Image 1 (cartoon, rainbow, N blue to C red):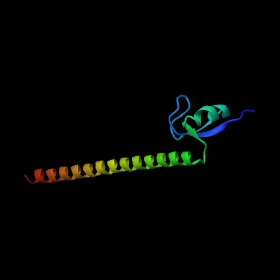
Image 2 (cartoon, rainbow, N blue to C red):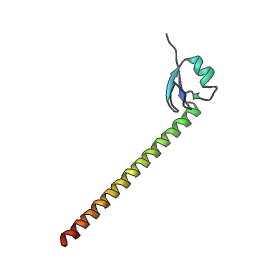
Image 3 (tube, one colour):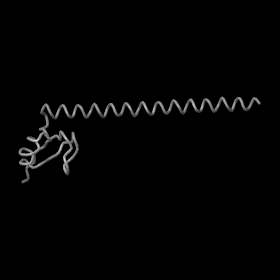
Image 4 (tube, rainbow, N blue to C red):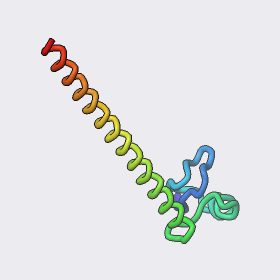
Length: 94
């Protein structure tokens, strides 16, 4: 039977995962290397909660920036269409 330790990565770890990911590792590797080096924390710990909260905030901020960018592009497109319609109207009068 294989036993694993579940940890939350506090930093990117080569061949293991990225910051904020929840991964299974061998107990000795987690206990003797990842936890003491500050690369990981146990789920439910204050450290893991903070990192997961920060990652969630960063994702939300990124989503807001993307949404604002899309809204800006949509507004610019609408203004461009209105300008084209005005130009066509002026050309039609001539």
